[in-house]
Image 1 (tube, rainbow over the protein chains, first blue to last red):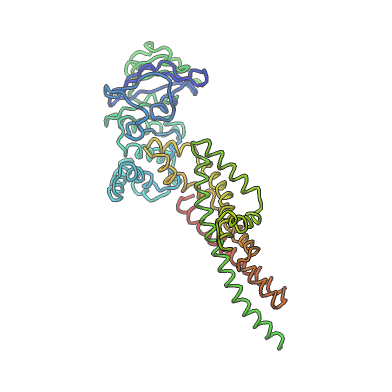
Image 2 (tube, each protein chain N blue to C red):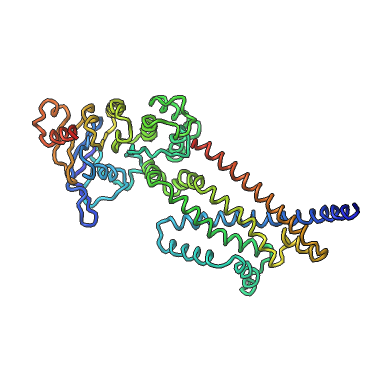
Amino acid sequence: MLEIKNLSKIINGRTILHDISLNVPQGHIAFLLGASGVGKSTLLRILNNLDPFNSGKIFLDGKPLDLSLVNRTHTVGMVFQHFNLFDNMTVKGNITLPLEKILGKSKKEAEHSAKELLAHYGLQGLENKPVSSLSGGQKQRLAIARTVALKPKIICFDEPTSALDPMLTGFVASTIDHLAKEGYIILVASHDTMLLEQLPCTIYLMQGGTIAESVTSQDFSADKKQAPRIEAFISGAEYK
Amino acid sequence: MGAEMIEWNFIESSFFYLLRGALVSLQIAGIACSIGLLFGTLLALAQTGKYKPLRILVTLYVTIIRGTPMLVQIFIAFLVLPQLGIHLSAFWSAILAIGINSSAYLSQIIRSGIDSIGKGQWEAAQVLGFSRGQALRYIILPQALQVVLPALGNEFITLLKDSSLASTIGVVELLKEGQIIISRTYKVIPIYLMITVIYLVMTTILSLILSRVEKRLKTHAGN
């Protein structure tokens, strides 16, 4: 269980995140919904030690989580909006490099694991291709495989559909859902209501750096009146 | 007919000496280039690093080295250093001065390469658990070098041509060999023509090698 308690971030007197509290149990998905600039991505970046924060506490499985160590202990993984794959390497190299240099695996072990992972994410046969030859969807699957290779407990997805063809939204949703079922704690930051509709999750509507409303997707689909602001956001997005 | 025979003999014998000089030019350029590349990379890393005093120091170094003529630097290495107790041969004085000079230029080329690599690559590396040093070594520098290879190539070619400045302190490289032959024979035109052709052949071969390396790196990256 990931517990975020009263997390705040202020830059030059401007509040970016204010008093954010949320819990994500293992195998569950927290969907941070909101327009651009409300702090969704910042929250994910804080969890990945890419941005500092001012106050608040974070616990993982009941123990305080020291964010300055999460990179070294590979507790948290991130699938970036633009994937951030290592462009100078092959598809396989993107996975074997962290396995060899970070986990200390032998070249043979790393290649074996990479091959299995790539096959699992439908990238078999592309092992020795350059990253630049992949399609957007393939790049995302490689980014997911690279993240999963280090076996983090938490995986963050920053705008997972924004760089992809809308046709792929269903596929992205099923991939994320599958990862949750494998036991990962998942956080998704997105404004994509189409993706939201296809993910069993807890929805957190973020507005102005705070969580304005939250509801499980199950409760929301049973009765939309339970979360009027989320409903307004979704219907607003639909009309745009 | 006879005159032509003598001319060919002269060219043949001079060519041997000039080639010997060219070899020295290549040695100067090669060693100076290695010094420049090693030192330039360290300077670039310092300049893109976290420590402000170090960044200021590098900027100062680059400003001084780039702002003064290489010829003056060669004279300093050859004439001023011995007064400070550092005695180097003319050959090594030239290499030191040219190497240090090129390190300033190369550092800026490499720094621009490092800067050209998007923040996303650093962040991906950090999230995967790479230290800053590991990220630089395995992810950032290989990509940066690929970006700046054409500029590096130009610098290498300039370096090879600049090695001719070593002749001013008595290093018998290509130009000096030619000048020695001219001082004996007064045959200015054929010797300078041969020197020019030899420089041109060397720089052309170098640029061909560099463009091949560039192509290979590009194919490897699949661009």
